[in-house]
Length: 498
Figure 1 (spheres, rainbow, N blue to C red):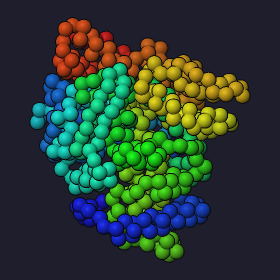
Figure 2: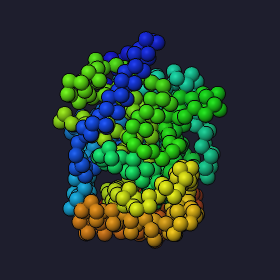
Figure 3: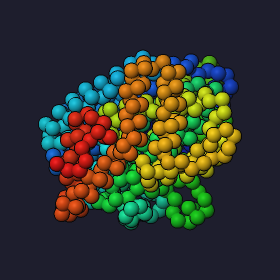
């Protein structure tokens, strides 16, 4: 973000200048789109996975600096809290044996990182929310030591004007307050990127929004927070509440939260960037010296740093990304809905399902978003988060009938998996990779098991043995870590605790 990030406050002139720059960036983006200056389609995808650090008993370890120093790889970076790190996988072309290649790179990278973490008494856990985290772990003192995290914390709290409130009503109910954004760090995700052309952007983004419910239903892996059993995928509601800049009066007025599903299908990428500028105040009004319209007039490509920075503080579950690589601008859709884990095989299976499904949905003769109200897609998102693999979702019925309610496992098994297979074929992914990784999703449907359901079952079996809540969660987490390292997909894990 540059040296100016260390500043702790911004005056009114900073904000006014920043708003002017955002409007200039929007005008420049509109021109770039009209002039068709974007990179040609290259079918590039990328992955980022956020990870937890724990000790041998599954309890959080606040030592990401020490672990990263030993890993010594630019592929691994800090994340919000000291028990978080992130691994970034270089972009790959969606073709051939790409899925097996991704799996091999992840296995090698994570095994190496785990060995280095062990040198300082830590291990890496790939999970949506570390079940053993307590409220005492998620405090400002445990944020990573980087200016950008401190500044973001300060700006969100300043905008809100009061402590953050968590109120999540699930199987049990959590109510808690926090004087920092540290609870956000509990939510560790898998982010999938796809480079798209401006002409295809709307179809891909709309398809990704429609796919969110089925994605989460089959991939949920975050059923616990602060020792309580909440939603099967608690991470999204936690993230929304932990980044919410709105005091109660603004919520009552309908002001939109920073973590946002959206409210309509779109017709182009510009729609999303324009909404971001129109609806959301600037958290970090830091201006670059670039004049984006002058750069365009001179035949160059503007970086649009203010637009990128503003976009990075608005947490859409399918986020638009503008970037310039080797002097050429490109657009990406960043899918942010999935939790990390449980295993490398599961992660790659989730990626195979996503990339195959959105290709098929985006190219369907009768697009799903013309037959499914946006409100139904949003309701599917919440239903999948609450109920996971047992969710029931709304989906367009056969023929020209309206949406019907269908169990997620039946929808995925009977309709969406064949679509995902055809989508992977269209990308040119090898049939062996297609069948192997979509087969993992099929087995989750058949056995009705995903990461969340396994965690909940193992936890309750611990309680049935007479363990108290804390010991049952710790024993379950320790067993999860053992099975995660085995590499076998979660649907095949033995039930309960050893």
